[in-house]
Length: 136
Length: 499
Image (cartoon, rainbow over all chains, first blue to last red; front, side, top):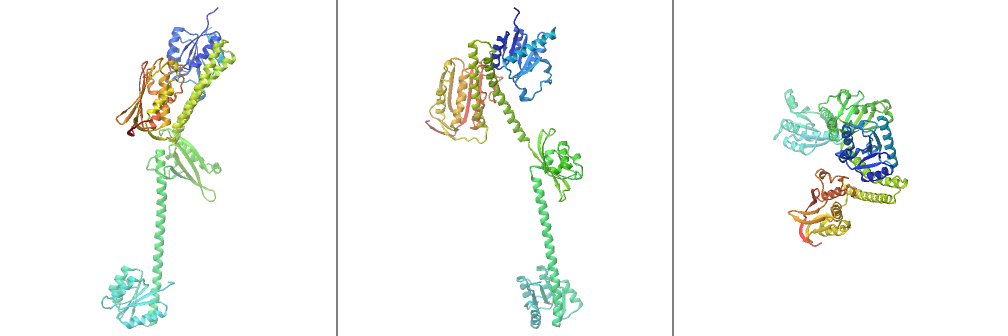
């Protein structure tokens, strides 16, 4: 049996992490978690995940953008696809088709929170398929 | 003159006085007589006369001197000289002293009446002229007053005013408008407004008022932003002035600075957006747990599913707490908050709060030490807000404590203040987060607080209560050692009494 696909969840929302960890594990993924961007970058080095699910807004001084920027600047890990999640889109009227602060192109997929568990599984599978196609 | 005509005859010859009196009285005039200049002057001062008949040669005060004095006193009175030696010289001399006419002695009744009636005609004209002049002066004064009144009102208005004629020229403005638009104080009239007012948005609104379809509305109201002027916002009202035929004469534009209102508005909507964000997090967690339970997305392990329901219930509970805190918070925010401030010994409030909260988390086995004397100096405070304040602080001290940790509560006077300390031996707050702990919805997130529920409003409420009681709050914290909150309330009365 092939090695399980490893997903890294980065979010400061403990409920989001616990729930989706359970759901993803139930769907056959291996799941590692991090509660901040900094912790997430450490986890990338130790765990070398196949895909990262990243929350856009974590803390004032620790945003998903910072994480994505750091990761995509790293020559070893820049190819790990990032699925960016955000709860702020509807509040700020942010348009996800636009580049934002130059970080926009550095992530690979976007989804708005709240996201139902099965929807997240679908988005992860879509992004994994897309990445695989590009790498072939 | 329609009414009574008063004539005074001043002559030292009784015959002349009496003769004149009879002739003139017969014509309906009211006639008084005086026998010398001095007596005559006295009478002029007490009664208004229309006409004086004055003999030139009199003892005590001569006719010329009398006339001189009367003229100072009443310039409109007609004076006619009666003279025995009617020469050109004396006549001219008399005229110089203010006489209107003269009549030589002896004279016939007809001659006298002719001279008097001519004099009275002149008197009538003089009075009319005087009246007209007074009327004109009064009108002028009114006009001047009205003008300066309007000028003063316009110039004192807090709202800016611009009046533009139909040639698009600025014809009237006030200092408020100059200030709001940052215009040159030496404005030139007669220039096109587009050349004077650099704010295109404002010029556009004014132009709109001039457009043909402006007949449809009475006033155009629009908000404009002036990014070049410290982002000030103005409410602009423009009305068209029309004559009776509907022809437009120009427009009046008033400007109101609404920058302050806009700022409040923005703070409000920011708060609303923060609140919705805070409400959504637990709600979407609840929805997620329930959806996972119902769809079996997280598998069929009964223990796992039960855990998810437990968590959903916890979230629902924290949501309720948040709503309660929000209500409390908005109560404190509203300026009309009714505080029942009284002189309080807060000793009992503190010890009761500790008693109530002691068993909040039995599993933690927290030790409490209360160092609060029964009698404390009195402070002026609202009892229920004090209860809320200590509830929030002490429950935080428990919530963020470690197992078998300690909570120490003390109160003692310190100079003019009552110092109250709440100390815990908990996880502490790192320097990075310390400046933000009183901010709305700010919660320190870290591995140790991950599963601690809270609304992020507890300390905000504490700070608001302290400030509304003219107190101060300080915080001292070390990571893994604990946190001490010190509150200082001004002492109102040193008289100690039991609670």
